[in-house]
Amino acid sequence: MSAIPFDNSYARLPGRFFARVDPTPVPAPQLISLNRALAEALQIDPDWLASPDGVPVLAGNAVPPGAEPIATAYAGHQFGHLVPQLGDGRAILLGEVVDRGGTRRDIQLKGAGPTPFSRRGDGRAALGPVLREYLVSEAMAALGIPTTRALAAVTTGANVARERLLPGAILTRVAASHIRVGTFQFFAIRRDTDGVKQLADHVIARHYPAAAESRQPYQALLAAVIERQAALVAQWLCVGFIHGVMNTDNMAVTGETIDYGPCAFLDAYDPATVFSAIDEHGRYAYGNQPAIAQWNLARLAEALLPLLAPETESAIAVAQDLLAGFVPRFETAYHAGLRRKLGLFMDRESDVALAGGLLEVMTANRADFTLTFRRLGAAAADPAADRDVRDLFIDPTAYDAWAARWRERLAAEPRPGAERRETMDAANPAFIPRNHRVEAVIAAAIERDDFGPFAELNTVLAKPYDDQAAFAAYADPPAEYERVQRTFCGT
Ligand code: AMP
Ligand code: MG
Image (cartoon, rainbow, N blue to C red; front, side, top):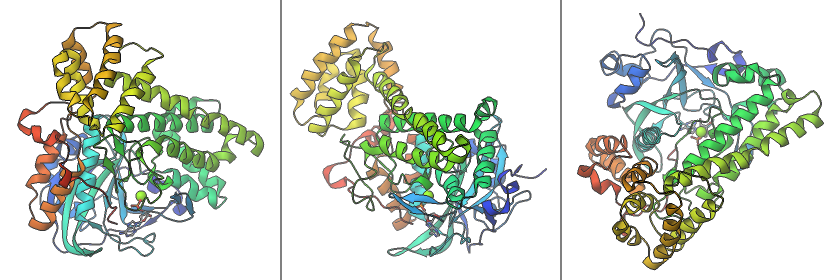
């Protein structure tokens, strides 16, 4: 039996969907981190992966039996501008496996060397962005948010030239698939309707089998992707996540969060927050994410037009109708998330205004998003704990005024305090990958070759909803001098 039980459906699609290309070997691979639980879920022996036989596979130095390495073709709108050809410029899909739960999943090496889609890039990844993606994607998974996963990270023993020389690394990424909105655009732009159709059929069979039962399978596909993106972005907002580069090539049609570049989490709440150094105009600001998701879905709808109805005019009407479903779906998911965060079980019309009122005073008072909600759980159980919440506001009385409204609302559905707190704690994480912590972990790895801080942060983030008293300091917001102002893709 092969060490990795590959079954590669994407490589069976027509040749114009991808380029066959092997990873380029690296001088001195070293395993930094292995996600043993994920390996087991994928039916791969973690001991083998960590062994002298497995590590070369994770570094691209050996192509395991059954793998069919390919770089996939895609296009995309980057910051609103169409780029007709992007594609995997530094990522190589080794193949797919069917996991323990029966789900087909991609195994991809990110940073494995040049491909025909590399354009001017070197096909490599620097250690910092690899560690960031590992930490943040695993944190998102632990938070319960759909995401690609990190199976392993290795250093390559070679440097990569960025603003300066940096250690090179490779991330082994696992995803339900790497098919993006931009993958559909690639074929649509070329007027390759047959390509769009074959891709849509592949996506339906693989990710949306219920759509195949519909009388209009492609309409059902678009509706289902819209539904998942609406739910995904609502979940992002509820934990303060900012993707940072929501280009259409960075939006997976599966509804998983993908392509962690200059992503970041809010500390102080402010919907206008932007961290990415390349996002000059704030296109991908925290609060813009729902609108951008809808914009990206409109690009998907355009690509699917020839499949939606026989005549263009009716296809456009269908697309517009389905796209109009985004906002109500997003709002339903987001408002339900906010109600959970506030400890509300019933759905009252005034709840949205109540939540909005809190977010407004948080913005005006630079209150820490994660801590405010986490501490509200304790305050729900015991009003004496209000002290710890109001401390987070520049003007604590602004919290008091809101808290009076909140308590009145809680009184409309009395629950034992402990029970309410428990449900709130399950919605309001204590631990998120705080930007200053992520930067510190990366610095330790790059400057001192010390991966201990990375491992510890990873451990803490695996249980975001537990208080973990021993790691309490990881819940703290940055001190003023620690505050991260800008994040970089590092590509
Ligand atoms: P990203 O900003 O990571 O979403 O990447 C956008 C596009 O640039 C994709 O087509 C990537 O494959 C490509 N790209 C990013 N970094 C590199 C690199 N170091 N070498 C080659 N291509 C790259
Ligand atoms: Mg990308």
